[in-house]
Image (cartoon, rainbow, N blue to C red; front, side, top):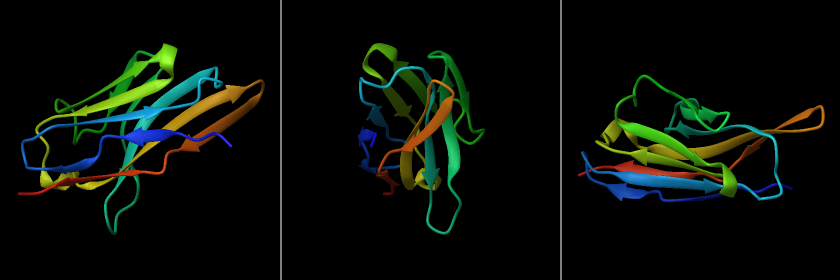
Length: 119
C-alpha cells in the first residue's frame, strides 16, 4: 500500500502564506503527475494545481498568480507554495500522485491537510 506523507497545513490570516509538501515513497518510479486538490465543506473536491513530467504545471483559475507548484523528482516530493491566501482558500488539501507500473496506472491520495484562512 503506497502512502503519501503530507505536511504544512494550518491556520493563517488572510494575505498570509503557507507551504504544503507531499512525499511519495522512493520506490515509486514512472510518476506521470503530482498534484494538489482541495475540498471545502459542502463542496466537491477540485483540482488546485498539478505538475506533469516534472516541469509542466497547470493551475485552477482561482489560484493562478498566487500559488506555485513545484517538484523534486529525485525525492518524489511535490510542494505547493500558497501566497496571498484568501478565506475562500479554506479547505482540506489532498496530495495526489499518478504513476505507472508496466501497463497499469495507479492513482494515490494523501490523507489531507487542513488549511484555514481566517482573521
